[in-house]
Image (cartoon, rainbow over all chains, first blue to last red; front, side):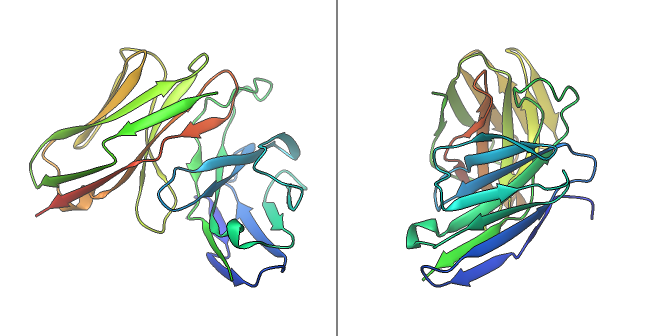
Length: 120
Length: 109
């Protein structure tokens, strides 16, 4: 399967613990995105990478959240000191920007299966 | 700020009963409108991208259309396997992808 993959698929943790999620994008894609989705809502943008550079962050991404894409391939999203309000589905997506210098995100994004986080 | 409103919130159809899902949007400089399908517990699955008013795209029983203010996803003779949540999203000059809340479609056999 050459789609976007995410691990783990499910994570249950206790409030105050740190968690880390991994995303492997489609291999030739140069852009990678993180979204959060809660029940009954559409995905909400968190951040995105152009190769290894993190170019935009949403105000939803508090200082407890950090994302990296060290070699421009896979990415990790870490949540420190988890809170019950962090419980959600965390989605990763990737895309191929034919002109990476154009920052408008107009190309199609392909999503992974998501990581479901439950904070007790 | 970009906004996407989808209606109705939920739609129940009988198998074979055609209908349309609506996506109204407000965006500064539309760069693209996207339709996705999402099954419970899974990530969104890409369906269509539309870039300009008047554009139409079709795939099996689905057809997406775009005007300057809204998009429709027409479902012709739906089957139970078309049951899912359908998400609409736009990207504009402020760059990020903004989603609506989705429309939950249920098709009864």
